[in-house]
Image 1 (cartoon, rainbow, N blue to C red):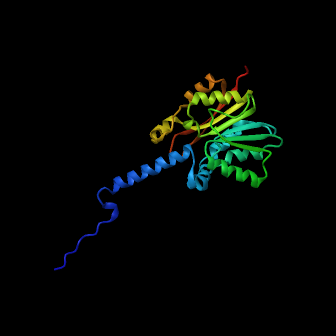
Image 2: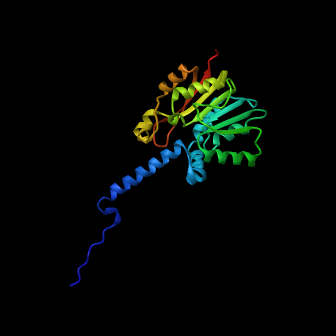
Image 3: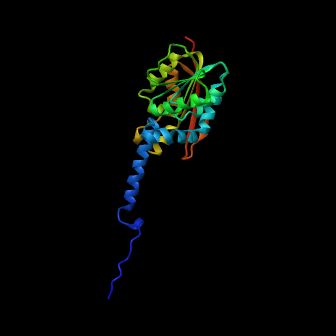
Length: 235
């Protein structure tokens, strides 16, 4: 007599749930590393586009909060896929926007777009970090950054550098996810630093900025995204 052996569906194999969990964790860590510093082919060809798509609403809030004019000198820290950077550039006539990013891949992508759009006189880009900015004191009317404060080597050092390069009376605008949401989603286990809106406002105040606005928008995974805006105190 021929014996029939039951066929197991792959999803019911012992340990398959654990395998999926490990795979999901590996992907999450990879995305977290890319968020901190996009690199490699994935960073250059794909991740910048993902950033632009994911950050559309917060980029618009940050842009609106800058309240700059066409002749302003602005700075973006961590321009990533370039959505906010080029929104700003298109609004300028006689002004200029500088961008600093830690990722060579994002820098190469953005420089290519600057060349294709003929914006060499309007957009200037450099590789660098917020805690050591290659600019003179009181250079900028406004500075901004979206979803980067989690990766700064030191929040206070970064804010002090921004206070140094922003003119007295100039504006600082920062977009960031709520610390509670980052903790609940497990991002703090993957290298993100979480800050509440009060922690950020207090840190900015200690470094020379007075808060004058806080806009919010929702996150797809729940929680809030905050947009802090502050004015550089006059010395």
